[in-house]
Image 1 (cartoon, one colour):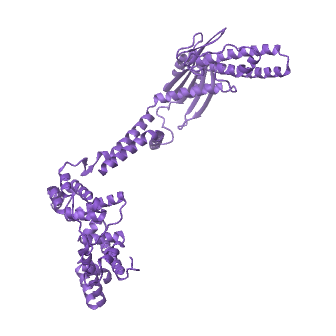
Image 2: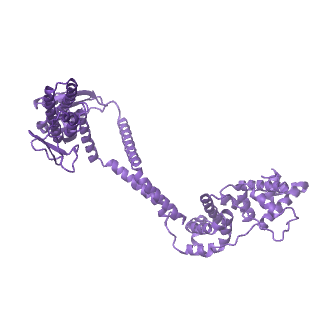
Image 3: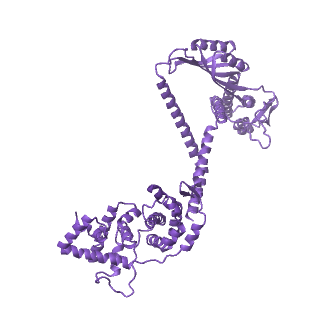
Length: 172
Length: 414
């Protein structure tokens, strides 16, 4: 009975409502993956794909995670066609130039450290730290085990800290 | 358990209660670990707080696009853009055409058969060394410089009608005593005054009760019709039953009678016949021969009236060339006439298996296996032929398929 309910879960949903509710998250995710110029197209394509695939949505993950999974595939396709680099995590320019959190690092150095991360590490940092996905959700979006996400995050943060402590020689 | 590696997961609340307790206990003991945890927390908050959040655009367009009926066909829950796969249809058409070309065949095979006969007769003609292609060429080759030098005119050569080349094989000739006239006619109409010359061939495959007896009967039949056995061979088939292959030559006029008599020897397994009209070729050869003989006479006359050694040698040299041509043309004419006079019947005889006798040593499984292997092999040959046709016709279909593929990709990108 539960399986039947899960299988039919997607049938009762309205794609318009879903788009209105999740467009911002999908758009921002796409913007970080393929750039602002291609983000609207990629987001629209994501929802069009979701419209066709909605009947197959079984509710095993949250709608947001499911949509980000579709968006991830769409962005990979766009990035491949346009020969784009790995996802970019862009930090705000601090208007007041203040250092945050006990003045440990400034934004410019942190931006540099993020740019130096490998694409895989940057991808999990983006999904977990920026998009706020749990390890399981991030694992589902990029199609790897949750343990891999945990390990990649650990190494990504280790690299970040190493670079921030010694910007000259601490890359990766 | 490596506490250092679990520190980030501890911070994110992704550890099980046991692992969490273990990390907490380690944190209580280790000051350095606590500092590291704090650094991770700061870094994590810093990334989350400082990351640029782009302002979303395009929601209205997306909602409009979602409201419109989606383009393409929904097949098993997946949307297929037909334009994207139109190249597949193009390739399928090319494949079907290649298969058709491979299968279409009878007319092709027959044409091949006629071509083989034509090749054979050409080979016969080629026995004589380098015969000129037409009487006109032959005449020009020998007469032009030398006969003019001695103030002689060459025998009247062929004059083709306007629009027809001298070497056109469909042209037919009509020779009379005064010279040779050339007139264009369709190949199927025999030239006036020349009896029709047909090279006829037949392939006959028979299943007989006794191969040896049938072989002897076929030989007798050929002899009684005024023909002869050109070649004969015997062997055994895969079931150890005798088979024989004979090439019989029978007079062309009695060809049908010969076929009928051979058919009566057993059960006809297969039969094919073909014929080639060589009337024009024979007439052409005879006309050329006539021209060359006239030239020969002129050179002989010249030779008699010549006194200078140099001129004598020159005329003799030309005379020898003309005579070689005459011999070559004569051989060609004889070969064609012989081929036309005696039709060729290729006869294959195989023996019927005795009723009740077990089929050879192998079992039904062996036979089924052999049949299956034959079918696979036949299919392989057919597929190879289709592949070769595809390859040969690639300059025609490949650009079309590539254009369709490109158009499909373009429409999909939109």
